[in-house]
Length: 639
Image 1: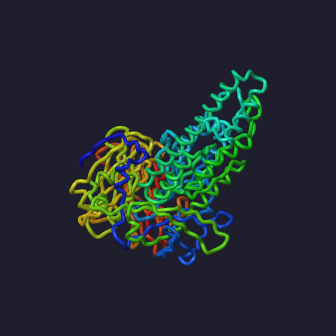
Image 2: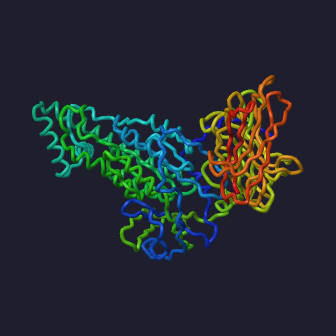
Image 3: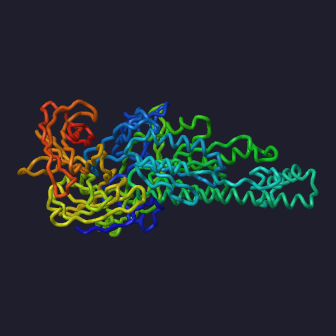
């Protein structure tokens, strides 16, 4: 078995055009264009009973037939949030991960630091942090800052990373450094240097007001220079933001499924140049399947840093809002204005994204031309709000686009944290055992295909969620011959994403991710490995994934730090419906010695009651030292 150790920091980056060109293309006329549609009632709750008859679709202005309407539920909108400060309940991972189950949601917080004044971000950031407590465990979150495009926290289910990233975010917007109090409209009029009477009147009114007690020969040039500089600042920063947002969203096109982007900004000035950039932003959001939620950071009406009242406070507020309204408009999103109830806004976003519809139609050959085509969806039902993208684009079919994904090497699947690979259905799980080297953990990975063809190749990666060192290796012939395939790699303790990529004998490939906290379990003076479940085959332990028809379950774990001269460990295997629930069945585990003086093997087999419910059950091993309980290790099993 070949192992390669590397730095495993995963970067959610703006994808290059070359990488975007490798997206899966439409290969046959029978494939459909899918449109993501949010449908909510007046309370903001998803509407779950819509059918094809309820929708009307127009493509480039012409009514088109719909082939399918599918409701996709991603979360329970009525679930109870778990406060971060509360004592966390014991969370038992699923028995295994698969690449066939629908994934959770993808949330990306994009904070426009250069358009938010210091301190004004606090209310929104705190509400965003509380939103993390509402999200389902499988939801992934990333945090980026604009316009520099810095990834503060990569896509992950690790809420601690997202919280830490949000805590680092602060506003950097400059203030107009001038002794004058001109409005944004006046600054833009001065910058335009227009000769029309309307623009001249705006500038003249500014001069009359600001230079009334000044020497005109000195005041007017200084005033116009300051106003021109400020007009240039707000215009350029607005364009920087829109362009950065558009480029970032374009890169998200390779991410599988829909993405919810929460764009936080205090202001965005609308100018003709900005408006032209917004057209590209709207198309980028459509093509990347991005749902946009624009949240305006709180803007205090009074600014203690200013010497006197602004020339046109209401006008400035309106102009700062216009660009944000346009961002929401061109992306088919929604704008949330500042208020004292920002938590309500975050709750609305969470609820609205808990379910959506995939509305499918068959494109014509003329629409497979690599050009952007406008779409419009309306609903034949009152009191339902729709949010949907405004267009689609299908690349021209070429030999390269049709075969690029199929010809990529297995290592490409191993390192690709963007796309989903589901041609080969897989399931996988992982366990932490003590490593051979001091301070390391041996991660045992188990995988198998749900198809009929045998695995021909498999590669594995342990990717550190904290950016530490990980591990990579490929399965050897002996491991590939196993059913299931069992292999192992060594890393330092920590949280990891276990990536499994595999190919079968008929050319299909798949990849699946398993979250793992690679830590041994404390049990008084002892340490415990993960608990594996399986069956006995010719007297030997054989791990397995599910026990749908099994009458027995065998559990296996290792016990470490056993005292050399005193203390006798023992263990008992139990089956239950909940972590702390009463045992449905139990059996003592045999304890075996090993070549390591402080290590013991524990194995036991219990009989599954005929009345045991189907679904996920809890298998737990209670460990004792001199008949005193010292610890317990649990895992879920599928029946």
